[in-house]
Amino acid sequence: MTTEVILPALPRVAVCGISLEASTFSPALTTAAMLAPLRGREVLDAWDFWRAGGSLADRAEWVGILQARSIAGGAIPAEDYAQLKGEILAGLVATIEERPLDGLVLDIHGAASVVGMDDMEGDLAVAVRAVVGPDCLISSGMDLHGNVSRTLAETVDLLTTYRTAPHVDWHETKERAARNLVDRLALPAGRRRPAKAWVPVPILLPGEMTSTRQEPATSLYARVPGIEALDGILDAGIWIGYPWADEPRNHAVVMAVGDDADLALAEATGLARELWERREEFGFVAPTGSLEEVLAAAVASPVAPYFVSDSGDNPTAGGAGDVTWTLAELLASQELLASGKRAIYASIPDHAGALAAAEAGVGADVRLTLGARVDARPAPPVEVSGRVVAVVPGEDNLEVVVRTPAVDVVVTRRRRPYHLESDFTRLGLDPRRADVVVVKIGYLEPELFDMAADWMLALTPGGVDQHLARLGHERIRRPMFPLDDVSGVDPVAGAVLFPGDTASSA
Image (cartoon, rainbow, N blue to C red; front, side, top):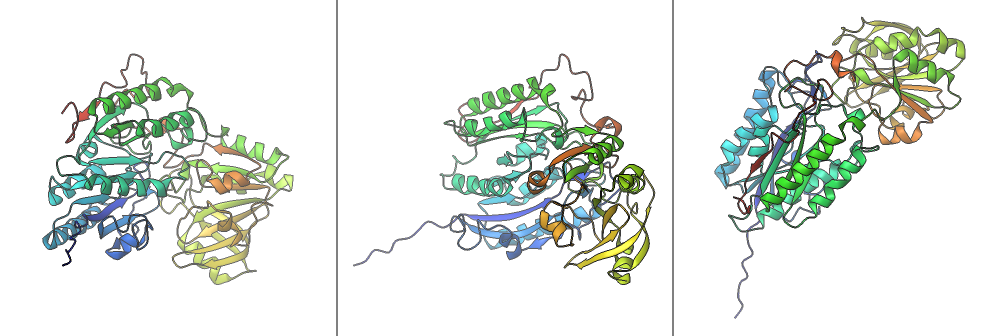
């Protein structure tokens, strides 16, 4: 006689979210279409760890709902957010009608903004919680440049964040959020929800001053795995926050999550105090200066390629991408022209300009008026005269290169970042042989960093201006370092402990 073995049912876990980094100081908007929502199986196919054969594929019954994601940009129009939120909630309702959910992965960045609303992520989390109910465990893996409001910290059960900037651990973090969730779901009901210590810290700094390539971020973030390894702690993180939005939640946060509530609070407050004590040590990841100073250094440099960050309009931080101020200065630079050196500029998005250059074709001489269609505040559209040397159509973009006497200008139909060597070489440009490469970026991404013989960060204007005082924050909590006098501030005065199922102090 054989005995049938009944295996425990896999937990049922939904995946959904809206992921965006959005500057409220940019006039750009990020529509629902630009967020390119994935639905159903597409949501799961975006990550290999829960696809068939992945490390977590057999740990749960994964259910894709809707995931919308875009490179950084402007705020989401209220009606577009309502559309995406409504579809997520309707999808969850339909899923639960089939069978209840045990868990949910809320895939968010942490710095999305919606026109007329504070704390999009908190609003979405509360709405999702209302549908899935109090017993469903929610987990999220976030960008360390995201914001964790009290609402978000209270509503989401498991929060983790990147530990590197540039974010070489982004995939690992998303997997850790999913793994933490299924690990907790393997525990008996009543022992799954950990305690959470949330410590808001009144610091607001750009990522270019908090890169983990340099101190004090290197050693501060290096403390996180040690805290995570403590008995009674599940996870810990430092959210340095997003400085280019003007909302009360924009500031740093330290969290620790675990079953030992007292230890979680002690470790989170201890790390927050250390962050505060070292606040004056934060500095830019590269030498900085005005564009005039940076271009002079690049032209005079004996080494090449010399990279220049056009940081104020960085599209991957939320800039509109079409600010022309730096490009106009570069084209007008008599010093660059007289030096005999050549520069690459990547890039200026202009739909009509890219189409016109492409229609003219390689070898044609063109005169184009480009940029400032979205953000014309720093400078008007710029005139570019030169020869078309490359036309590269893509699945969702069109890129052309216009060669002027001293600058190869990359013109695109849609804004996009230039982070990889292949981004240039497929356009027929060799950044390694260029004298100067000007990129709309903040800190250099790994490939560019390794390629650069030297580099500087230009403090240029735009929606993600590194000079935060020029932006004029009005709604953040005050006082805030480095914008205000913070003498006498207790950095952990706002600490909150959310007890969990098994917290010792619950």
